Length: 153
Image 1 (tube, rainbow, N blue to C red):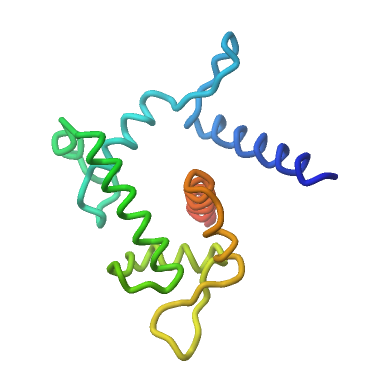
Image 2 (image 1 turned 180 degrees about the vertical axis):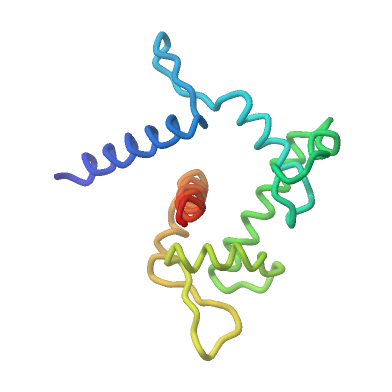
């Protein structure tokens, strides 16, 4: 099996999972996939919320706070947060360390590992490979791993 064949199989599996979770919808006439409108709206509201301690489904007021979200500001904020995570992975102290839940996820992905002689985990070989990927691939792997972790009992 070639690497391309394996990659296509993983892509089909991911697509099927996203369809089963009702995150994506398929338009068979145009042979396209898109985010389910309700999911897109809710994820936009959740990303626009500044309170990271509360889960979106635990907050009745999220829609009120997120009305009038400036998408450019939202994208800028998301890029800053992602940049801070990437800096943390490589050991830079330019940004504040991410939330403990994010650090735990980075470790569970194998991108970082704890060492006895340091306060924060250090980058692994897999972490270096991750850093060489483009941002869309990084985010996809991050979100995919997160959803797999959430599904575990």
